[in-house]
Length: 125
Figure 1 (tube, helix red, strand yellow):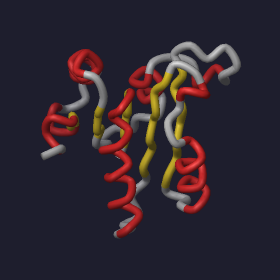
Figure 2 (cartoon, helix red, strand yellow):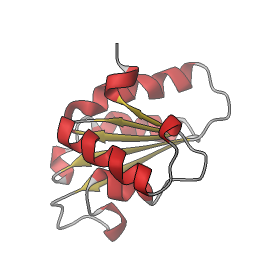
Figure 3 (cartoon, helix red, strand yellow):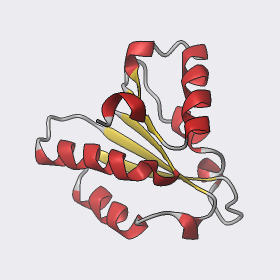
């Protein structure tokens, strides 16, 4: 699973991480968390602990304005996430409406099947 969070979109994706943790099935999860700077990352300590506790979880910050960020962490959440995408992988997106609209079209343009793209409108009820 590839989870891409922008802004307050992190909370629903955290629920998905917790569900995988409660019923591990060998699935690998990469969570890309978008923020302007490292200090803007929400609950980074908790996610660091989760990542250390679960070998199947990788948490990647995506910093749009992070002058001290590693090159692999610099950019918007979707651009960074695409570096972690694997064929056949399910992609879950949660964030501001503008992010969701542009992300879906970008993913479709990269030949990621629509059935593999899930946005917060479809999985949050």
